[in-house]
Image (tube, rainbow, N blue to C red):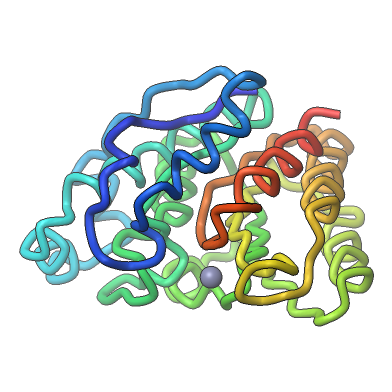
Length: 247
Ligand SMILES: [Zn+2]
């Protein structure tokens, strides 16, 4: 499977948990032998402007984080584009799902998912899409930017039981007919992470449900990294999702 990545993502760009030293290495160490890395390229100013107000872009620029945030957003676009043809994973940071049109919080700066989907939509590559946000935290930024768009459906499963959570994902995906399913893949709902609920095998199950739903309707699928902070398990959880995507 293709994994969109850039060595710049190793950079500790802030003191936030998402930017922690060793976080990307923890994932690369586990998956590198089984994937093909594709080098991420930055999103253009126009691609970012489709999702964000100029004032917010200026704020990110003044924070000194424009380059790394634009690279993450561009990596998400590439991941989504490859996802139309074959499942793909965007190993990117900073994350994006708490970035709204005019503001951001929670370690996020540009909304990678929104930038990616808007870019493909405006290029005419997709007519509709579904966002499945499996991060522990509600993806408020994605809802802020894409919530009024009739062509996107956004789901944040909230079940506190792991069996019911996976069932909820199954219900969300049953009978879905879209050109593209994008997973906002936070892994902080894991049993050994902040949320304390999902097992590693559940990420396999979720990846597999998405892959099968995409196959069933002739659509594509992709996932981009959001949260996930326990470096001991993060790589194995990413590996499980990727494996579910390809079997
Ligand atoms: Zn989170």
